Length: 254
Image (cartoon, rainbow, N blue to C red):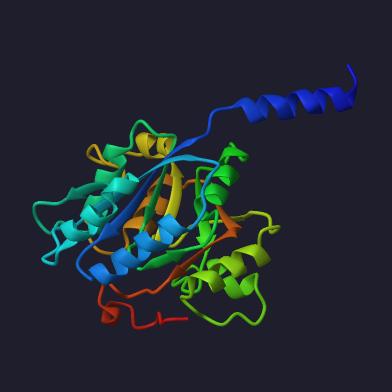
């Protein structure tokens, strides 16, 4: 068998593999204008290489989050609302519970705007790198993970929340290769469901003792997953929407 024929057979076999199944979770608590903006962005961008299901998980907002859900439910949006204000990690754990049957879980804040193929790129990078369990995008607001800062990959970056400009940035970085990092910012994490199932704490993967922030750091410290940054995936992050910025005096909008 020739080498060319062998490669051709492998490629054909890969093409016939079913699309990976991904549950994508958007968490919200009030500030529904940001939630609606994120949903608008999600449904206007392209993700065609994964079989995905989008969930809107709400932490008992006092604003009309049901109205936002009703606007998008015909597009396949799923919805869950906490009976009490239980915190962000409770929504992450609920997202895991609702997506145990998937291959991957992506958790996102509601104060984001997506670029074309952002989820495709995260999931495909994980699928092609079996020793890695977590993938994170680059962003304008990396907080305590400066390796995710978009300016590491795009020169003369100017922050903008314009959808077309965000898509153009993703085009500039589409040939960048993933890199190993030690942890990721919790505003957007793509993870193998098998990783979460192996690292349960009182039956859930995320520690509810960190209800608002710090939950991802506790998880990275406990689970120690092999993590990659995927530069071809760009997610704009407004930052400090659901959590008061006074809690993070060293982190500013970038």
